[in-house]
Length: 244
Image (tube, rainbow, N blue to C red):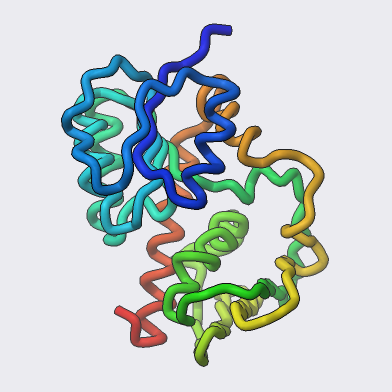
């Protein structure tokens, strides 16, 4: 199998993990820092990996899509729904592949959903505010639950927030409840959806995700659709909490 030629923009904590795995399965032709001038690139690459701060995703992704280069973007695809939709449209227009990081889908976990009430719990010791938890943590659970939760299925959202804690309920029109709780002030590290534990796994999900994106048949349309759903849910809950 011929290795793909790739480029990387962003070499922070997460970026270094991605680079480590890309080195094993691809030819990395360039690595730029977030503040480098990415428009100076001249290398022949198949994919660009955007691992930069959220606010920079849109402009970088737009540039490379217009160059007809496939794009892997760290979540969220953009900070505004309109921007994310535009990038997906550009991908279709220029016939390029666009993939948004959904690492939790590669942990080979089976999630069982109850027909009455469901609990999503994530605790760890970390920096940041309750406001940041929607994009940083809840986003992952939104795409894991994308088969069950969408904007048109929601009847009610109840939300409360405290320093370093975020709690909200999404009640669907069929009265199924999803109770989300995030705590980054906890000394206990855990991530559950009902009885399924997501912070413990035996495979290498980063390697599996990158290998699938680069070399295996993949449904990019579903990935893009889920990314849009996640942004819509973040906006919806954020509006209830007064974040938007």
